[in-house]
Image 1 (cartoon, helix red, strand yellow):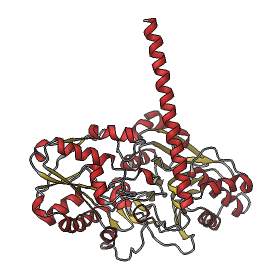
Image 2 (image 1 turned 120 degrees about the vertical axis):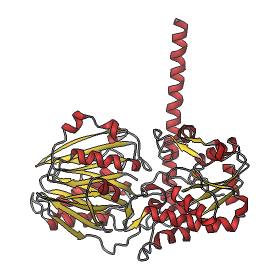
Image 3 (image 1 turned 180 degrees about the horizontal axis):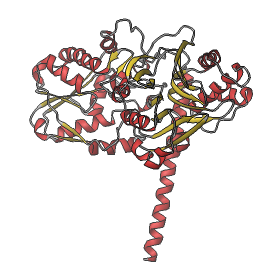
Image 4 (image 1 turned 90 degrees about the horizontal axis):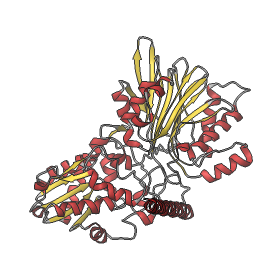
Length: 512
């Protein structure tokens, strides 16, 4: 889950890309980067941190050009917070290419081996995005007629990427002296939408992870990029498109509608806000079957993404809706933070209770999902500390029992509270008097009700069915072992640092 933007305009695009990244900041808070094109030259600045912290006035002045791409990074399985893995990535052979990617490849190791032994290309980081860039560069080299590119060559190279790369990828890329290329994997797992801005000097085109970026930047949404499709906007700002995959099937990540996307976005023709309203309706029906409605005094959402579901649930059940938690908007999203201890410590900094909404009441808390359970446990504890007589908990999503390998940081089964536990056991783990989960069929219906033609979804974190067909138990085991190794290494590094600090304190004390 990252945010990407690509634009070809009639005027400098640096401010446009910066503003777009600010709108997509919810998709990644780990790092940010912008690359612009000016003729055959690229200009780039990137770094770790929030968009507002990475870019200063001097950085923006050093990003001239009327086309560009931008990225805000969310660390996924197997990645690190190393600034070297910030995007965009750049290569200069056989053409100047700079790329930003949202998603996660599932055959990265195989591709790295092919890069080394067959393609003779060097990979500098552990990022699958750099691997994807080099695959595309190699395919361009193989299909190019000499050192010139044409549309057939570019689209053939994308077709080569589809044949070789497995997993999820929505991509924007600049080709020096040629234009902007964007494409989506053959399953359309990660979102990508294109918009236009008609100006007196001609059309401008913007591609982004979510339609909200187009809305706020003054672009009219044209449509979603189709799975397997490539879009190319040339230097004359002419748009070209072609289907580059065999047998593409639209299977968007359903977790985008549950949590990842902003409610004011429209993904693959479906309003995220309206899907969340419907999630609340379906969830209300299930709550009524499991908990006597007369036993619930008030419905309280966990801000922010669960609000539409909680409001609709309360209305359907005829129960008062109240805001019981106040959010500190200057604390990062807990789901994105690395490490359980950091996540747990941040919850009470992030949320505080409105005590009178809990005291002496039987409350139903509604959240968009329960992943690790750490936040849910803290939230239930806060409700009881505020005086709640009973605390019921409802999740607008089904139990998350399987790792997501397509770009969301939930890679190991051992970290997921629902793995190997019944609903009753999970309720006890988080301290709730009762727990109600959404049914997967109801979740899919929440989206399909708004677009009946949307028949397939990636719902792998709920049902363990991976749409790309290449995710094996051995692959999941390897991810878990790698992650556990990283966690152990990180703990050792923190322990060593702690011991060093204690020694320094001791030395300073003895010299004091």
